[in-house]
Image 1 (cartoon, rainbow, N blue to C red):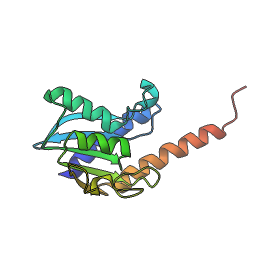
Image 2 (cartoon, rainbow, N blue to C red):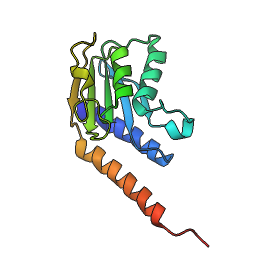
Image 3 (cartoon, one colour):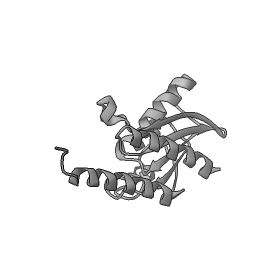
Length: 156
């Protein structure tokens, strides 16, 4: 079942790529049903908080009519950052499932593990590495394309 939802998150990530955003996608699920989706949009929205996870959390909260999302799970193609992890805890998510690790800003164990902080009042289950190869490949291809385009001489 996690692969099914992660596959949807990968489709969302591709939507971001099509718009020139770093390809990260997220899906919020409750009782096996997709509640909301999101993809990275900070560039297009001129909003540093428009990460895929935040976009999906906002849509889920709107749909459910509650800023708390108990019983919900979030599937995301890249290990969440501190900002997104904090939002997930405030939303009271039951579980976060991520694909690829983020060794630069990951807050689920790569740089730090916000979810393991016992002093915080909510504890979300975290599962990492679901379809990690697919998500990593997507990110690597995106950045390779960006580097190649940057090396290309301007048209005359």
